[in-house]
Image (cartoon, rainbow, N blue to C red; front, side, top):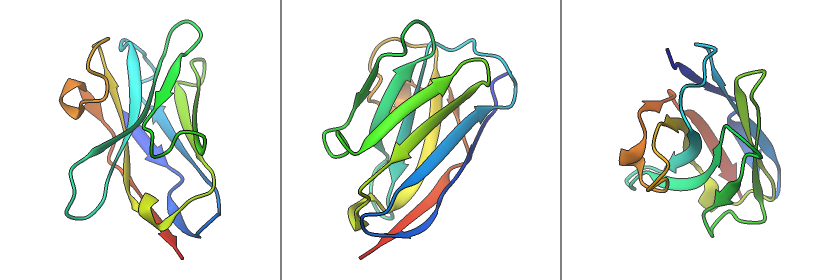
Length: 125
């Protein structure tokens, strides 16, 4: 059973860094891909980045975070991380990790089968 638990959110200043973690407490990885999304108040859930659990863990990112955010994962720890550097106030949102059996449409929230509870990230100027 897939149960995603995020941690690592908080309040920081512009330019600071945070690292979010997402652990599958069910300690299984039947899904092919995982991703990070975020949702700011009054806005739709937005794709941040995604990676595959198998192989080399190819990653890709939204243009808004490319070069600042990095996804990594350790399949033996059933955990993925989102390293966020050079944070901006526009990055303020609740961040969610998600997992999917799908190999397509990975930027679309509807493609995901499992979601974590979310963790708040607040960046002040």
